[in-house]
Amino acid sequence: MLTLDLHERMCKATRFHSKALSRKPLLGEALSGFSGPTLFLWGEHDVTAQPVEAAQQLASGALHRDWCLVPGAGHWVQYERPQEVNQLLLRWFSGT
View 1 (cartoon, rainbow, N blue to C red):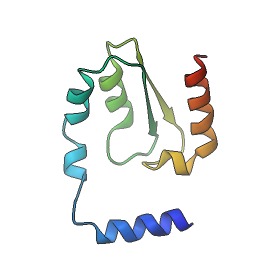
View 2 (cartoon, one colour):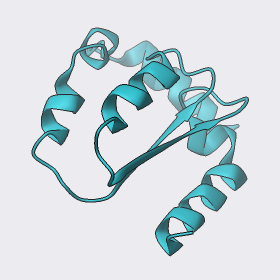
View 3 (cartoon, one colour):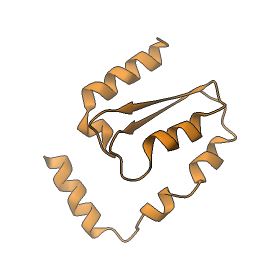
């Protein structure tokens, strides 16, 4: 729970509100010049985006990009479902 306690304290103390920034098309624009392999992971219940819509938009038309939706997870997918995320990463890095 230390991670969640720290996250809560940082959210309350922040002076930068990133939600408006996260809804801009900046990631897509930045990725337009990148041709390396990319894996997008979203939690099913991520509130910062519409996960399926965002993933499809960012990965569409690029054979080197893939995405996965992690069931039951929110925005902190790597903390909420670490075993699933680790398995997805291991498979992706091994090319299977």
